[in-house]
Image (cartoon, rainbow over all chains, first blue to last red; front, side, top):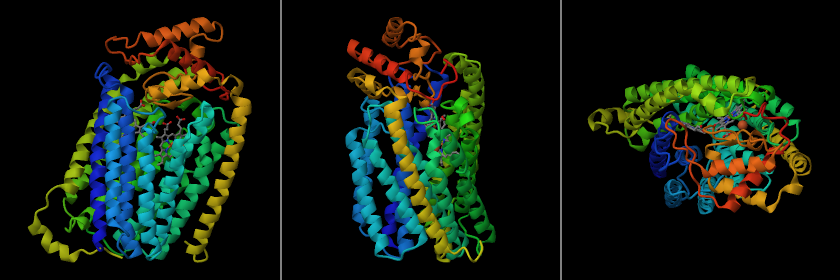
Length: 449
Length: 150
Ligand code: HEM
Ligand code: HEM
Ligand SMILES: [Fe+2]
C-alpha cells in the first residue's frame, strides 16, 4: 500500500464479500425451490428470493467497483483520496441501504420492475452515494496525475450514475417502460461497466506484468471504443419484441453481434501482456483471476451472448433458460471475476503482507469457474430443450418444465459447489496469515510500476 | 500495434465515435418512443384501470416469477399473451373470469408443483390486472411469441 487512504478499499471489499455471501445463499435457495417447489412457498416466495439474489449481486459488484476505484486511483493519481472520511460515510450509507432492502424484501416491501425493486428512498440513497463517490474520486483525480486508466474509469463511473437516473422514470405504457428500462440494464453491463472492467484490467496488467504504460493505454482506448461503438446500438437486441419498430431487428443483430469484439480484444490484450511481461508477479493467483476474467467474459458475454442475439434466433430463445445461462456466465465471467481479481491482487498490500494462501486461492478459482461452467451448460441444455418443446412444438410451459427437471438438479448441485468455492476464496483472502513466513517476503514485494 | 496509431489517436477515435453512436442511439430511441405511442400500442385504451393494473403487477413483483413480453424471470409462464391463451379474443368475459378464478385459487398446494402465492387482491385490483394483461396482449410485438404457449 503506497498511500494510507487506500485502506478504505479494504472495507469496501469486506462489505462486498458479505453481500456476495447473501447473493450465493439466495441463489442456492432459489435453485432449491426450482427442484422442490413446495419448500418455503408460503414463507418466502420465489420472487422474493430471486430479487435478493439479483439485487445483492448488483450492489456488491458496484461496491466492489467503488473499492477498486479507491484502491487504484491513489496509485494512478499519485495522491491520497480527497476525503477518506466521506468514503466511509458513503460505504456506511450503501451498506445500510443494501441490508435494509434485503430485510424489507423479506417483509414484502419492494417495487416491481426487475432489478429495480428497491423502495424509492433507497433509490434516492443510491444517488446520494453516487454523488459522494463521484465528488471524492473526481477531486482525487483532478488534483493528481491524469492517466488513461483513471480517465476511462471515471467516465465509466459517471456513466453508471447517469443511467441510474432512469430508475426514477416508470412510464405507464409498458412498451415505453421497457424501452428505457434497458437504458439502465443494457447500457450498464454492455456499456459503462465495460469501461470500468477494461480500466481495472489495464491497471492490473501494468502492475502485475510490468507492461509499458504507453502500450496498455493504446489497448485500453481501443477496447473501450469497440465496446461503445457496438454496445450502444447493440441495445437493439432487446428491442425486437417489445413493441419497438421492426428496424431494430437489423440494427440490433448487426451491432450486438459486434459486441463480442471488445471481449475478444481483452483476452488478447491480457494474454499478450502476461506472456510478454517483463516480470513474474509473486501473486500468481491475481494474474490467474485477471486472465480468467477475460476468458470468462469472452465466453459468457461474447459467445453465449452471440448465441441468441441474432433476431431470428432470439425469436425462439427470448426469455428462456438460455437467457438465464447467458446471464449467469456473463455476470460471473466479466464482473464477478474482475472483482475477485482485484481483491486477490490488492488484499496482500492492504493487509501489509506478502502474497499468501496462493494455493488455496487458485483451488477456489478452478472450483468456482468449473462449477459456474457446469451450471451454464445445465441451463443451456435446459434452454435448448425448452425452445424446441415450447417455442417450436407449442407444448405448454409447465409441462415443458417437468421435462427439464434433471437439469435443474444439476444447476443446484453446481450452485452448492460455487458456494463451497466461495468459502475457500474468502478464507484465502481474509484468513489468518502466519506472520513469521510473511515478514521475510514482505520486504521483497513492492507494487510494481 | 503500429506506430502510426498513437495513444492520442486511439483516444480521439474513442471519444468521437462514442459521441456519434450515442447521439444516433438517442435519436433512434426517440423515434421508437414515437412509434410506440402512435402505432404499436393502443394509447387510446391505456385507461386508468390499465395503469392501476400495471401498478398491481409491480406492487407484487410478479416479474420475479413470470416474464412479460419475454422479460423477467423464467420460473412461471409468459403473461404477455396469457389473455390469448385464456381465449380472451373469442370470449372476453370467460377469459376475465378464468384469470380471476386462477389468482383467487392460489396457492394450489399441489405437491411437487411450483406454487404461486395468494396476494389477497380486491375485486377492483383483480379486474385492473386483467385490464392490464388484456391491453398488453394487443401490443404489436412483431408476431412474438411464436405460439400461444408463450
Ligand atoms: C458482461 C456483459 C453482459 C452481461 C452481464 C449480460 C447479462 C445479461 C442478462 C442478465 C440478461 C437477461 C436480462 C433480463 O432479465 O431480461 C441478458 C440478456 C441478453 N443478452 Fe446479455 N449480457 C452481457 C453481454 C452480452 C453480449 C455481449 C451480448 C451479445 C453478443 C448479449 C446478448 C444478450 C441478449 C440477446 C439478451 C436477451 C435474451 C433474451 O431475449 O431473453 N449480452 N444479458
Ligand atoms: C456468482 C455467481 C452468480 C451470478 C453472477 C448469478 C447471476 C444471476 C442473474 C444475473 C440472474 C438473473 C437472470 C436473468 O434475468 O437472466 C440470476 C438468477 C438466478 N440464479 Fe444466479 N447467479 C450466481 C449464482 C447462482 C447460484 C450459486 C445459484 C444456485 C443454484 C443461482 C440460482 C439462480 C436462480 C434459480 C435464478 C432465477 C432464474 C429464473 O428467473 O428462473 N445463481 N442469477
Ligand atoms: Fe444487452
